Length: 213
Image (cartoon, rainbow, N blue to C red):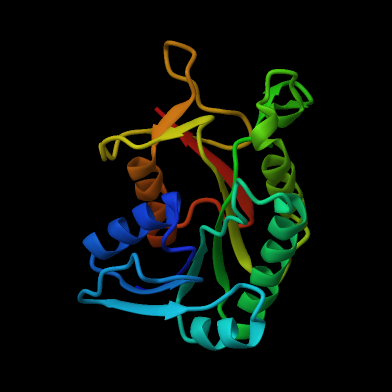
């Protein structure tokens, strides 16, 4: 497939890029700063800001799918507004480009950990991640109203860390996936596997899903 990847140099985006290329997809890797990306076969590299909608729409046009691993930056003091505005800009630009398929990588904060209680609203949720998590929840709520695109929103497991690519994990929808030790975790490599699996064989069109071991 011919896939555009927004945020290709980030923690999640770089893992997605590796997975896509290893599976033989043609990828346009888009980032604000592309110096970290190594040129290779089936890869086009493009610098663009998500707020430059005209340029981004041109880059996205003609692709079969767009994956957004956009992150406004965890140390950004304006992360809440920037994340929401950036997410809205990406959705608008994908529609402008004519691409129908959009997969958005969000956060685990909006997963339900008890009836009617989302993780981000619990007392133990880390304050340093809270504004980004609240923004990701708002982005999901906005996507739920989107009717033109075949969108999917992916919430990682609660603990997302570097690790191994096993290709073995479980999927859920609105509640975290826990293992037999009551842990919700996944490696970023296996998160990338789940993302590319969903692009190749969609199972969660106009839905949110999550993954974990």
